[in-house]
Image (cartoon, rainbow, N blue to C red; front, top):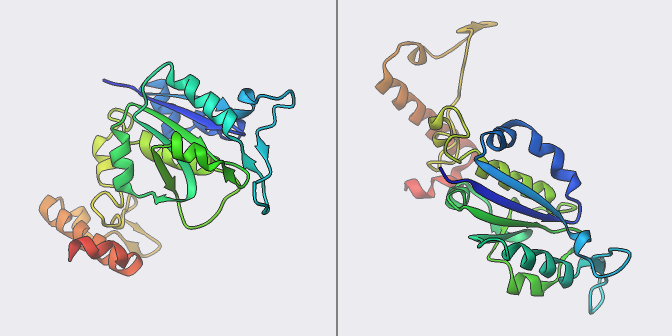
Length: 230
């Protein structure tokens, strides 16, 4: 079984370190199904103050991460292995969805670059980056949270990470439908009952009910997803 290797390049890697020790990512690491290394861009700065940002040419507000530390870091990483993707998390990248996660999850070696400040020098994007991804049409302080979102979404799809392999296959968005309502014990709570069909044991009827409810839920909350069903 192959192992996924992810190198995360960030100006503030400590801000995401703790999350790596919880939940699905921790389980994947303990099972040796994923290896995640964090790299601090300040360690690749070429000045005694380890400064990595500077003012933008042409004026404007905000600071920009300079070319040198990013190039130095990524070029050193590329000396050790060949990477399938070098991903930059940016608000103007392609919008992350389950299809993109599925596609990337079969890769073995990834670099994820988390931007910070106002962004990174365009020459990094032109020369090094193979894919740019956004988690939504809004702006965050840095790319660390989007990096965690992407990593979490990827890791849970690695075979062997989730105990019930079917669980990930039937998540919302896997078939361009939202997940249907889900229930557990007790069968009745404060007068609210679990639908009878889920208690009857007829698997075909249950699957039909789940599909109908998923379609109904998607029509209500995310009708934009139904274009593939037309």
